Length: 388
Ligand SMILES: Cc1cc2nc3c(=O)[nH]c(=O)nc-3n(C[C@H](O)[C@H](O)[C@H](O)COP(=O)(O)OP(=O)(O)OC[C@H]3O[C@@H](n4cnc5c(N)ncnc54)[C@H](O)[C@@H]3O)c2cc1C
Image (cartoon, rainbow, N blue to C red; front, side, top):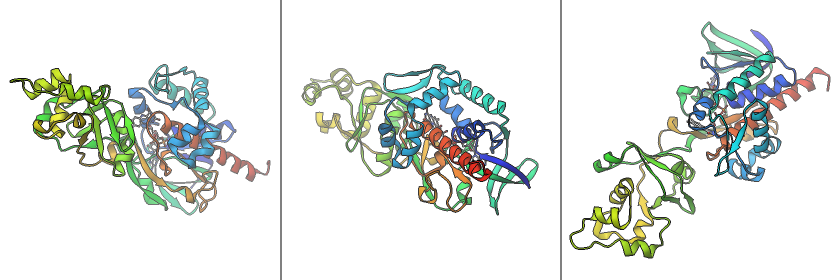
């Protein structure tokens, strides 16, 4: 049995943020992760531009992420994320849509600087250590050298959600904890049972249209993939679609319906393809969508072009989702994110039962809850050291 002061399980952004606070308060910290290297999902997030936060008020962030995260976001919001990243030598910029990125765009320089700071404070990282649950007061790990038990004065659990398992967060921790709301995909694509003619537009982006789910509209780009629709434009509507809303697309959002009606006319021997291409100026992928979902051309109308129903066959699998809904319920945590049934054990990040759209809200929420849990753990240690 190894006895230590502070144990952090999971070396993603939430766990590293907790370790940052704990080590900053002078506590020796051991981080354990089941993977051979830390923060693999964070590095993956940087592949298409690390969207660390969104340039909005706390109210914007709470509206996106849920009331449960209010205290954490008030303590560590968008401006704090920027200051923190700049403090690690990564200048930041705000894109035209309000998304905030490091100038380097990638996650690796930020992660390197972060890990170096933790190492300089004496934080150690145990790799390939898989947490399998508690035995009495100890955390039990499967390690390359066999089972190891660690008893810590404080523990922060930050094992992520249940998507992209190959990067580490497989959600298996849920078997060892009670009160876990079932995982559901969030910020995910949707499957479509395409007809064979769609094969020639697989991989192509649909740009400049307006996707709608009930009263929510998204102008973002969507890719037509072999299995369905993917990309930011559909992720933005994915929560409503997952919860049963129907998807519609306006193929000519910048044309009034009257203009579409005037152009949707077949002259002489003109083919319907020519009407779509020349009359409506639809590119091949939009024209393919019209053919796929519009029924026989004789029934096409301007109203249909501007509100085409898209038949979805269900969400993409959980493992392919950018994030997950569900996780450890807030009812079993106190206001410091400590498990009320296990004093001294705090929880943070995507393993908690909250969800948010893309746009930097996810990483901001993970950093904010990680710091909050780390602060709670440091206060817990201080209160028990008799120095408070
Ligand atoms: C492709 C992609 C792009 C994304 N882009 C963005 C973006 O631009 N902006 C944004 O805000 N969000 C983005 N996200 C989401 C964001 O990366 C996650 O929400 C965030 O990484 C979650 O942080 P976390 O620390 O809670 O969990 P994770 O990052 O998943 O880290 C959890 C850690 O716990 C470890 N672990 C799991 N189980 C165990 C166990 N039993 N024992 C020991 N260790 C364990 C894992 O190996 C992992 O290292 C993206 C996600 C994906 C997949």
